[in-house]
Length: 252
View 1 (cartoon, one colour):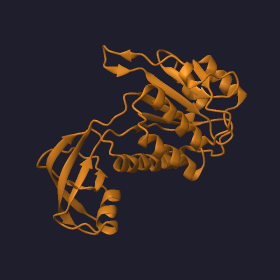
View 2 (cartoon, rainbow, N blue to C red; view 1 turned 90 degrees about the vertical axis):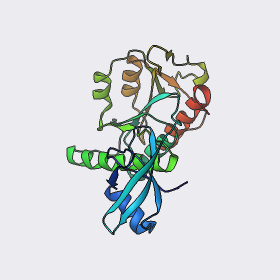
View 3 (cartoon, rainbow, N blue to C red; view 1 turned 120 degrees about the vertical axis):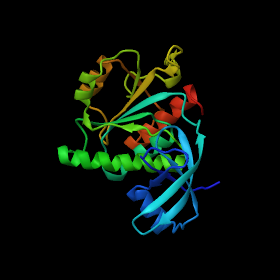
View 4 (cartoon, rainbow, N blue to C red; view 1 turned 60 degrees about the vertical axis):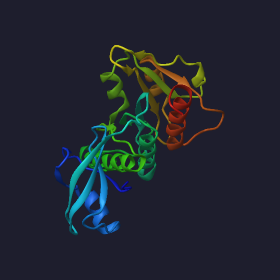
């Protein structure tokens, strides 16, 4: 079974010959030094792995022919959206990478009052493209064949205005007046649509959420929880919360 696994956004089907995208081409040809006849696994987010054989390997071009398809059933039973306060540099990348490994469905970067990073439109577009590559790489590593969505950054106030509280389970980390996760009601399974209600997890950036933001989130249905007596960094908080949610309600 081939171990090298690459994201390929093209339509994949038995017998198809596809061009690997630039990042996969560089990794296959220059880093792994793969050659014609080597096998690899491609995925495009449709829930399947496609076993391929490389038919052309050049410095800037790699072609692969699909000869097998296999459905992958390793998605989390929980429908988690991570609302992550935009943090600086490697912290944001690390949070996104590990959230994908932990089974997140959607990631919404949010600008908060205490966010150190300030993104104009051009920088936001570049960061989004970079974050999407982080998501793809995390899927390659973790074996996921469904690619989580990462949305364009927006302010927390803007997101709250656009997303009124309905049936979601909304959670934020806040030590004041907080409950333990196990005290919250488990999200209801929607048998008519064979899905779970969305769990929306809000995490502040380096400086945490302001009191005004906590109040606004609470007004919009977010429940405060606490994860022990110690203060967690933003990247630790998101991952600890997701792991706890999976332990209490999910497949851990």
